[in-house]
Image 1 (cartoon, rainbow, N blue to C red):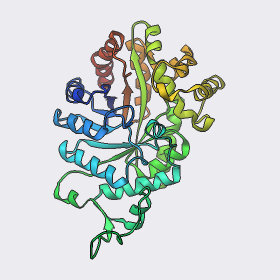
Image 2 (image 1 turned 180 degrees about the horizontal axis):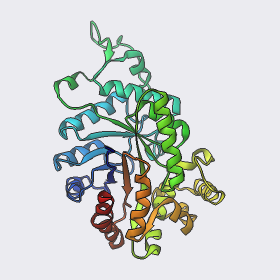
Image 3 (image 1 turned 30 degrees about the vertical axis):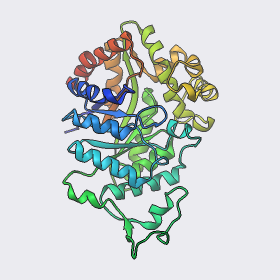
Image 4 (image 1 turned 45 degrees about the vertical axis):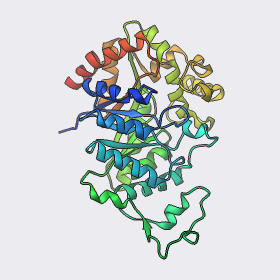
Amino acid sequence: MTKRTEFWTNFTSRDPREAATEAARLEADGWDGAVMVDSQAMYPEVWTYLATCAQATSRITLATGVTNPITRHPSVTAAAAASLQVISNGRAVLGIGRGDSALAYVGASPMPIARFEHYLEVLQTYLRGEMVSMEDAGSMLVDARIGFRDLAIESGPAGSSLKWLADYDVPKVPIESFSTGPKAIASSARVAETVVLGLAADINRVAWGVDLARTAAADAGKEVGVGCVVIAMPQEDIRIAREIVKPTVATMARFSVMNNKVIGPATDAQAQIMLKIAEVYDMNRHGEQAPQARVVTDEFVDQFAIVGSVDTCVDRLSEFMDLGLARMTLVMPYTRTPEVAHSYKLLVNEVLPRLRAS
């Protein structure tokens, strides 16, 4: 029997004092999981936020959406994820990507793919409670003097591990890797439990990514779950939906044009808009009405997001479910307006019940 597609969404409050209330609401609304951004200059500390959510819920899965491999050592990330796993009684997922806004706000660029794959391997080792060599652990420290010569100890540990993790009978925290390009998708499929595709809501692009992930995993002798992130905004008036999602569409499309090179299948018209987004993108207004949103056309929105009537949203989301996706994360904007609230109610009360009944 084919496992049903899970439906996740994102936390939208930037106030950690609201985390518990929002988490309880998302759980009551029937979402299978929820993710919180890890971008220290733009949002509250993610692990504190998710720990608060865990204590206010009992069923919903909680994940970083996403953390990165540069601002934290893998032992620190693994310890945080494993702690959330203990607090939540097994409902934690470690979502990670090569880095974006969290790095931009400290003047850095994403980690190269080869190093990222090795980081994932080390992270998996920590999460399994196994030993990481001191050479590997030390090589991932920034500006540290390697060795024990300046410590007042007679002997030091032979390797690096989460020694405390063995005290708790919880499942290993699964890793899901957010990926867009073919190399990142393949490397993630070899190491992570799930690959989450950031290819927008174009079915041809997502099908391309699904095939890449499953082929890479099979070549590595394993299976991998595949999910995707899409923007879904049901509205009776499609014009309202389009205007709401344009900033988020621009942000998501930018992942497919890193290094000013279009990634994945795209028409000439789509490629021109993605390149223009990269050219004018203002990180100071990440995800907001900014120059990048103004270059997004209605046609582009209709292709890269799911907007329109409830029937339209159900039909388009069903196409993605037919790909056998493990889950879909339906992204909601961070702006809180009556129009966004209305779309959310349509999603929860009409769209999701019909998808789950199909």
